[in-house]
Image (cartoon, rainbow, N blue to C red):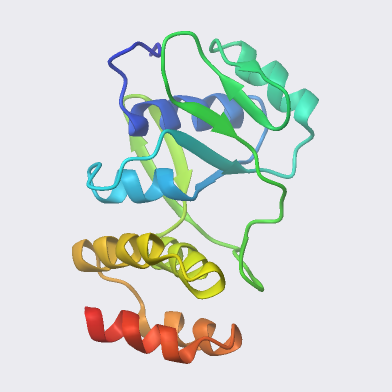
Length: 174
């Protein structure tokens, strides 16, 4: 499958992840792109943040096969889409908690590894907790209202982050 101007974020993410996996590169989608996918673009992100421990040279070589070119820094652009791909520094973690498992979606565009709904909620809450970003709280709520999430796991993590009061605001908003 090719990336076109009509490709949506889930298709592009799947093509990118599948390409990386075929080149032996493990990568997991995180951030706002996951929110976009889980909310059917109720929240729309234009960047796809993949976490990978692979070196940028190997990632760049793999993504060139599907038309992405490396720009300065850690991001890649494609001539047929406004979406861009970034590679924040590893490890895959939310706050102080390493993430060891994730969701996998298989679709016609390929295999996509992404944060689970629970971990995506935690990822968004991290922005709310640490930067007081209300938009991140809203995104966490969007996901939690559409998918079953593990509230006890989120609460335990929030306690570890020292943010139980803000967690209570989240829980009460559900």
